[in-house]
Length: 209
Image 1 (tube, helix red, strand yellow):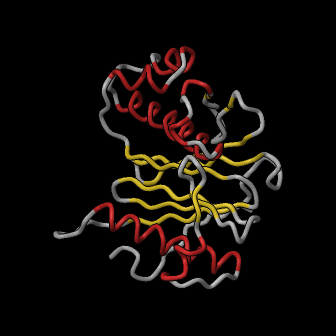
Image 2 (image 1 turned 30 degrees about the vertical axis):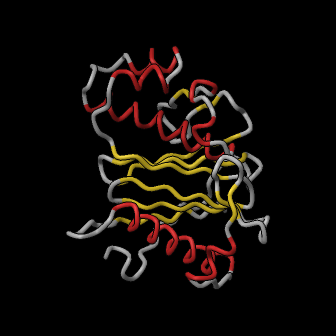
């Protein structure tokens, strides 16, 4: 079982986006730890439980069987938990410069993207699907953008939410949040088979404030 928790938030006048996303991410993390692992950790205690690897990915040194990852974009916070390595990314679909395509996508991926009219809605949506697949994979690896996005390749599946990956060790699940936001979760195929058996959407009291 790979719990995935996500929630929406709103920025109000005077809010600092980074601080709000950081604080909500920590609240979401504490919520998941209590709900799925029975660990009750206060806000003050949480930072003492977290360490980071040399690439900046956080982990729990005191709980080696609990892996987690948190991601955010404008309006959304997402957290995923697993007994093995896990990576999650969420992105708001929007305009992007042409230079991003060559930096992020392999030749084959660019050919797939070119089937759509440039800058059309489907074109932008597919680019950000690729983006979240790649970033969730790089976070699964624990390296983030220290890793070259061109070193891994994905091919969409026309009938499944599981794209094919050049790295056969992983499986990847994607989900649309609203109509303009895509979420991808990358996980070890050894984690309870090749699929996410349950995808959780939890509403937490006060989380939208």
